[in-house]
Amino acid sequence: MCLFNPGALKAVVKLDKSIALLFSDSYANFSDFNMYTDYYRFKSKPFDIGSTPKNIYFSDFHKEALSAMKYGVMDDRGFILLTGPMGTGKTTLIHVLVEKMEQHGITCVISNPSLTKEEFYYYFSHKLGVKFDGNKARFLVLLNKILHACKKKNSKILLIIDEAHVLPTDLLEEIRLLSNMTNEVSGVLSIFLVGQPELIDRLEEDRLLPLKQRISIRYELRHFPEDDTLLYIRFRLAMAGLDRPQLFSREAFKLIHKVTGGNPRLINILCDNALLIGFAMEAEQINRKIIEESAVEMGLIEQTDSSGKDKGRGLTRKKRIAIVALTALGLTGMAVGAFFLWSRFF
Image (tube, rainbow, N blue to C red):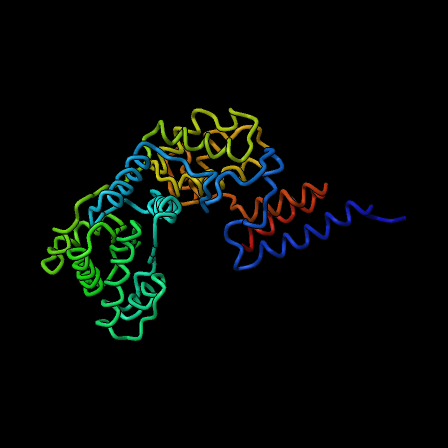
């Protein structure tokens, strides 16, 4: 008599691969575990950190920031400054702007703050379609010709410096000097400085005051207010094909906003973890308790008992998923045994 039918045998093979993955050091974010997407009937993962045009949510802050950046380019405002805390969507806005402006000219996005001056000129010249041979004077002559050619065609050049708050001072000064070219050929080159709020403090340095004086448009992105947090989560769920509008409870929404402060990146990670926990618990709704457990695992809050004492991190995701995987095959005894062995030795 065959112990496993073909379907069960496939499940065991899949389980073996899954448990091997659980013990892997590289196993950190459960990217290979999409079980909850089937359980909650999603067409895709709703809180994937990678942004696509389909899943970008524009709060009022983001709409204003994008409008300000577009205005800065079209109205020839020179230097434009965009700042905001980590995870507020600065890079996403850059991608949206580039997509909208590509048809109007040349875009160059530099997101590596560790470039030397020579590497910066090499990369920028590559985007302009010319070769940098190490001679800056020759490059400036070529750039001047390109600016004149763009002026005749009524096209733009966008130079966007991401993570500008950690850019070396020498390179920031070099970028400022590039803007001198616009004195002769106006209406072509726009330079964006994008970074965290520390960039504003850096611009107060004596050596960077000339750069600060060139900035004509400033915009600071902020975290979501509570209403936008709720709308953002519902938007991402809808884009993933959710057919149950009440998947997250009202109390869950409130706690999500409280522990993340309305930071979109943290919201994504927290909600993704919560859905995984909800699947492991076979929960029909993501409630406050599930969000709290997810927040504890992320280190956003401490777990305490009724006396206020720290209870630690509790059952980790790796343990939970292993138990769920075993239980899904009907191996309840093995699941319980695995839990106690894992609790003791891991």
